[in-house]
Image (tube, rainbow over all chains, first blue to last red; front, side, top):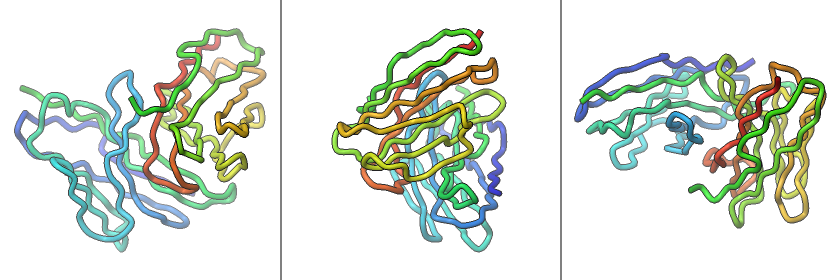
Length: 112
Length: 113
């Protein structure tokens, strides 16, 4: 089966840099994506990595190492509005067919 | 606003009942995905439809079913409801058949009493 692991909580201060790690174990692998979800809101797509390396989108960057089954989301110049839950997700294939699997989520608290 | 709409926003019903959740994808998107989010299970993929056909299936219960209509809107039917079915149900859409970039609707909060 599939499994993804993320830290449950991370705390940082405004203006800092924080890294949220994700390790995965899947039968197949079709890329790693990241979503942000504010309390009471819907998940919002942040980034996607299909190949090894770093993808940068503004203050957010995402990294993937397929050989290590590992990725991370890097948030720079943290702002209060970045306080949210962050989920990594993979597309996998199991006995039921293709399947989108989300990690348990990391709750980021940004302090003033 | 993602452009994905879901109705109703809230639904309260009793055990054993059946409900239908509705989703309209973003204009131009052909895929619709359904997810269940509860406190103890996280975000769980249920099922995906692409252009009217079932494309992928998660661990969706047999009591649950879905379909996508010719106008591309989708419905998720939940029957013989149990207390444990109480959750947020999200619909997402994307352009292609296997996109990681999905756009989520605001969700339907289902409470089973």
